[in-house]
Picture 1 (cartoon, protein in one colour):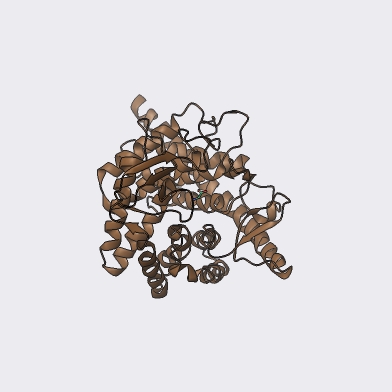
Picture 2 (cartoon, rainbow, N blue to C red):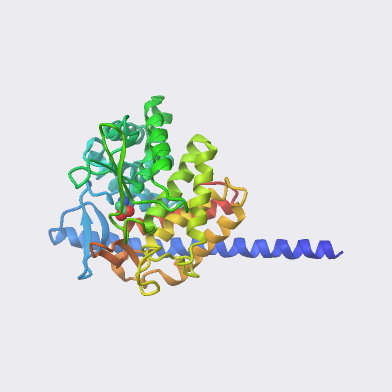
Length: 396
Ligand code: GLY
């Protein structure tokens, strides 16, 4: 009898949690639809006033909408948000807008000057292909993978991140996010070279980017002739030996995705260790929205980085489907989403239509500190969709 009572209570509790999570997704998307309607008007006004650029990225210190050209690493996030709005609502209005904003950045498929191909092309065309199965989107992804592959150095075993800076061959942890495009390009084309490059990059990063506590360096600089590691540094974090919050988020998301695409258990274990570093960190606030760097010197008087929290939440939802401690990851992701939805959204009608406030782009260069950012909104919507699919026993 007691056992039956206990089982009923447990079931009621699980149903309640499920209902809260469904509620977050519907509240989050209802708000995102309204805000994106405002954003579209703001984009029109900015263009009418002579601004160029194809996608919104953030707000300027004066509060103006910042539109970026297709070559900017952030150009794919707004098209991606439009695909997610369509995925959630099935409203063809969002489909038409997603197609139009995605088309704006097609030229990037042949831009070999950057490693940010995944962010640009996969968040836009990748979501477009997942949604519509349109052949042209597949072709764009394959071409983008060919272009990205030109940045791979087999001696180093990695894709080069940046050109023309102080390093000979820098690789940043963010670069893990470009590998999904390569994995998919192999599936679409049958050309295994993209898959091999992705695996080599992930393995080399796993070997050289991490400390004993499973936190990640931001930049590892290699000698392109010998493959030797020359320096381990930061660029957007507080210090070379600190843990820049978004870098940890990219690492978590990247290795979780690599496990999905390869089923290599080493990637799963890496993702679990990174999740442990993030979730058990003594500077992680109770609401699970990290400061911009886990070692920022002025904690608790430091800006948060909501974008890192959204990437972590989305990654944890996926990781929860592979890990033996998946329930813990899912409850943490649910908590992040609940806190973002309740405490970090813009006021309705404000922030030029951005959804979330309080992200940090680059604190050391005093750029985009405590602002809305398009990638925070993108990964928030992705996390909401993953949460909804998980509640329906699927995965986005
Ligand atoms: N990939 C650039 C950044 O995370 O700021």
